[in-house]
Length: 577
Image 1 (cartoon, rainbow, N blue to C red):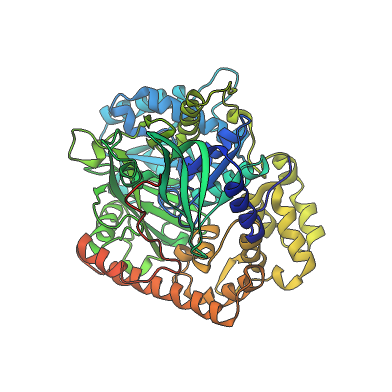
Image 2 (cartoon, rainbow, N blue to C red):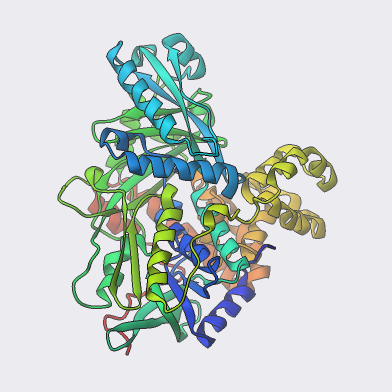
């Protein structure tokens, strides 16, 4: 299988194909679950289309803690099946599906009490490690180790000596969540799926009670069209209830949004060779290594305001800083914070009023003929959610559909990755780039690195790093537009790269250079380049201002003051017949 591009020409072709033929499945939602459904369905031999109203992974799937993990706290809730399932998926992702994108990461669990806590945490991690075993394979990460206080402080000198009596070291994994989604979609497209962002579902097509497709609006042009499909899958996460309402009648799924915020600080602000996990009164707090940075989070609070752009308030930021500073010898201040991002978890609503106690398990329903809805779950188990959703699709189709095979499908860039990693010094010599730069590219693109290096070979100016964000080459900006479906400057600076949270200027310092690089492949004129930079700058200004507000309501009002580069109007309220 070759790789597929998601550039402007491919988007236009995908929309034309979706309009011209009746599909087996159309997926609404371009986050990790929707992308997973598209890949699962197309690799079962079904014809598939996927639409996303904004950019791919622009919601929850780009704003997570970026961890692939079982969830230690679910052990305390006796949810062993969820933990086992997630850890088995972690093993698959690390070793077979995406070894170029998913990597092991160590975490230090400081102990604050003698004897009983070590026994309690240790027994939990014995269970955690054992649940990760799958017959015929390995966990993909080392087992946990008990450490004395002295040994723990040698690994993490940043911790106060008084903050721990000892520690346990264990391993999980991490991923760039947004890049993973784009790679999922490129893999699905390579197998024949039709994929288009900035394409909004505005209503369902109906024949009596049965859903027979969706009415879509191309938000770039305003043009509307019908996309007919034998089954529609709604995978819109925190927007599930809204989409569900378009079919009328009582909803079978109710999703409550829980806000989690994360801070990004430079790596030199916390002296540690390992990540750190801390217990709080409500949940857990992670200090996660992230290249030349740390990601610190998260919170867990109910959110009933704007779901497109959840805002972090001053109170949120202070909460995270207060909790991490409780264990740091040199406390962090707001001046140390490079970036802040807020995301929403789509939790299945239950009896509990506390979002931290709502279910992370998923549900699949068939509320009316022709429509499948999937919601809940967690990033790590997206593949299981997708499999279950397509099983429901198969049940609704009048044909024999093979079982899921995505546990054996490497994502684009994975096949041959270990061999290419071993050859990275030769690759550096041939390309004229430093081996550290090659390693960075391999971690982002895997074996698709050749496509990036081809751009560099054709135009050596693209071998230069961006001025003001030198972790990224100019070629990566161009590649985001030509191959990865980026349509606007914000897509590149916040999701194809992480410049918006990894620099103190939050991307404003490179906005002009990046926009000029995007102008060619996206066909922008001078006025569009100017417009893209202005919109991005206003977005950053609004986010900074919202983070100075004391309450969610004040922060939300300020954040909504920034205009959308492509406005997303509310969907039609009445189904199309």
